Amino acid sequence: MFSGKTEEEARKHILHLVSEYYCQYHTKGEYKEGDRISYSSRVYDEDEMINLVDSSLEFWLTAGRYTEKFEKEFSSYLGVKFCSLVNSGSSANLLAFMALTSPLLRERQLVRGDEVITVAAGFPTTVAPIVQFGAIPVFVDITIPDYNIDVAQLEAARSNKTKAVMLAHTLGNPFCLSAVKEFCRRYDLWLIEDNCDALGSRYTIDGKQYYTGTIGDIGTSSFYPPHHMTMGEGGAVYTNNPLLHKIVRSFRDWGRECVCPPGTDNLCGSRFNKQYGELPLGYDHKYVYSHFGYNLKATDMQAAIGCAQLKKIETFSEKRRYNFSRLRAGLEEVADKLILPTPCENSEPSWFGFLITCKEGIDKNKVVQYIENHGIQTRMLFAGNLLKQPCFKELMEKKEGFRVIGDLPNTNIIMERSFWVGVYPGLTNVMLDKMISIIKNAVKI
Image 1 (cartoon, rainbow, N blue to C red):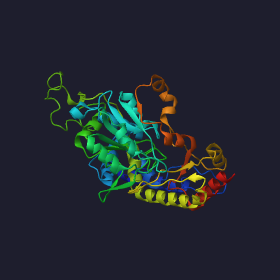
Image 2 (cartoon, one colour; image 1 turned 60 degrees about the vertical axis):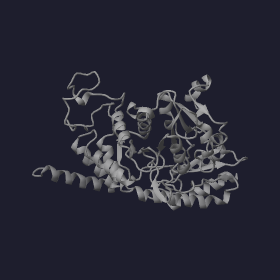
Image 3 (cartoon, rainbow, N blue to C red; image 1 turned 180 degrees about the vertical axis):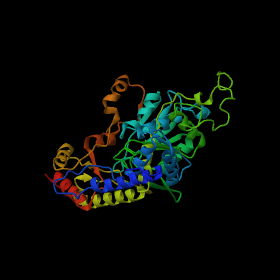
Image 4 (cartoon, one colour; image 1 turned 90 degrees about the horizontal axis):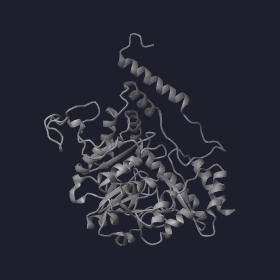
């Protein structure tokens, strides 16, 4: 097949066949009555498959040219200076938090026993790095129907040990960034934006619109298949702070001091002629470690998929907004039985899901089971109240290692009465209208 062809010609031939393969075997048929409607799914075309195969033909495997391309283009899209591709959104949160523990930050370094303000309503890996390090999460309540932090509790949550705020934008709906950012500025606190469920969301401060994840000191994203864009597995950490970027790269890449990418040597020009710690003079800089780090890099094949997905992200976001609006308009008829979600003021969400809270007297479990039994996939708001989860049992029994502001009544409400359905770009009007009809029927029985 490749006789007489150059390698470049052979590659083009293979990629042409990949495009044909996609068109033949990966295009989906239209929704048919009775098909299950999932809360999310991958949305892709031949571009992603071509990039993936193109990368695999090089067999570089670890981070390479596609990684560099993705980090550059993702930074440009968000309007930030620095981006580090990692292997998951959870790893991104881990790196974002651990960056704040670096001694390079001097007096602003987080140490064990320092406090970090957060919420208990959400995904556990927003909070897990705080607990795992030995810092103290301070849990405040949320507000309904935007399902984000109750900023009125920020002052009560602060103590002389508070060093940071780490919060997620719930299902794409930005939290009140103006209030949280001002609070952090007033007390010289770090702000980590867990942007894993909100890529493409925008927030306006002082008349200027920014992408969420870029307003705090560090932002994180996830590229798991249900998210706004996907690499299968993958995530990113981004910042405008060059020191934080350096620290994130160190923690991501085994904790090393060296900044050379895989397969590259001596970018600094001083690989064998400097003194580090108590190591011998001239010890190989590639094996000098300034942090107790990890290996959390993504592969170039993941990055190749991400490069294709990134070109679609604005289209994806617009479709998510449209799907959300159609669901909300269609469900207004049962607003006496359901609390419908509301965007945060000054925001333009790129919705991850459509979160619904059953009003008192409406049995959420019966509603959810009816919806599921009629072919609509649902999800809870992740951990509900993290303090009620088995992983928190030991800390709750000891009554140490965390603080709680009040009784978290709204957090408990979403644990007991809330669920969500999808708004991903693959949903059609027929599918959305079917969802509306089934949800209406569920609350009327």
